[in-house]
Amino acid sequence: MGVEEVARETLGRIRARGTYRRMRVLEGALGPRMRVDGRDVLLFAGSNYLDLAHHPEVVEASVRAARDTGCAAGGSRLINGNLDGHEALEAELAEFLGVPAALAFGTGYMANVGVIPALVGPDDLLISDQLNHASIVDGARLSRAEVRVFPHGDLDALDGILSGAGPSHGRSHRSRRVLVMTDGVYSMDGDVAPVAELAALCCHHGAMFLLDDAHGIGTLGSGGRGSAEHSGCDGGSDVLVGTLGKSLGSFGAFVAGSSALRDLLVNVARSFIFSCALAPPQVEAARAALRVLRAEPWRRQALQENAARLRTRLSAAGVSTRPSTTHIVPVVIGDSAETMRVCEALLDRGFYAQGIRHPSVAEGTARLRITPMATHRPEEIDALADAVVELVEPSHVGVADRDPDRKAEPICRSAESSGPAA
Ligand SMILES: Cc1ncc(COP(=O)(O)O)c(C=O)c1O
Image (cartoon, rainbow, N blue to C red):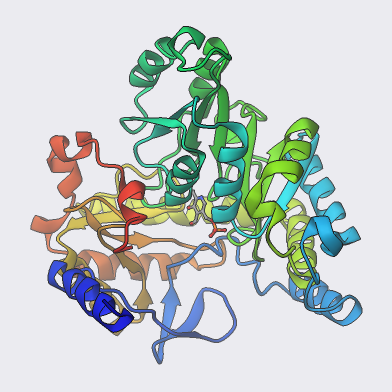
């Protein structure tokens, strides 16, 4: 079978399911007002939460790095691509997060598929929240460890698995390693993991704890240090994964933790070793964004105020945004076609909030994923909320809320999203 036939067969299946995707084209400076597919809109999609991607200091730092150093690192970190800027970025991230060390990766996806197999192997046990991101699922698969998935946020279920996971349950003579993994802020639901409780459970059972805070770093916690700080257990994870491409307005990612962890990753994380280092403009943009993020806490506050305003206005009109408590605001519609109809109708009215369908979310829980930014004006938030209320059929909203069994399904969204149809 040739490529054409494979594509026809697979895409035919995707079309029949109603989940065929195409990419929209955005134009203009990244920010709350852009052109999407030729239409001027207010942008309520994406992860440039603090509006730093086009911040003058961030842009200037990036331009200067391109001019002074170049547009590429010129190699992988262990060969010839380890620039002073990489070391400085990592030291600054570590200092910001209050941990001894950090190591940059090409993306958050690469960080997870690098760090997980670095910590566990075929004889070991991975315990993963049901709604963890696809990159955690793929990292778990690469490690070839046994994987147990616990229902989303269910601490009792996790405790049960951990209680039976001691060394005596291992398959080899050596002590079995156990790694518990969770997102900090769930990327499609906007709820925050119970980080303090998870950390305590891991500590009690002697398990390692990986927190992927791609959406929490910079946006949550009084200092912007993310879900752990927000949950009152700053520094509570053994392994903290964060990205530079979301609130930090650049590109790339990092793993933060102990110096031993950094040393281990430099020596064994394949997605670090066998891949080009971050380019200087990305590195310097991230460093500048980190400075702005620290100097301008109003951005974090404005983001959360905007998100709260949106959730409150939608809820007051009977549109559920559960379970969100953050800047990721889902409106679960359920049906994929209806979700995309609402998404298109919003675009016609001048708002872009992305419709999300299976396999990115569980079947029957298609939704609008609305992400306000720190720099949206209150009247813009209100206008979007009014448009959503007008367009969303009350009978379609909150499918997940009305049907508790659907939430309890042991579906691993991210496991499915990594299949061939993703
Ligand atoms: C929880 C989580 N982890 C990792 C990633 C991947 O990060 P990146 O886009 O830098 O690959 C994402 C992306 O959205 C995410 O939501």
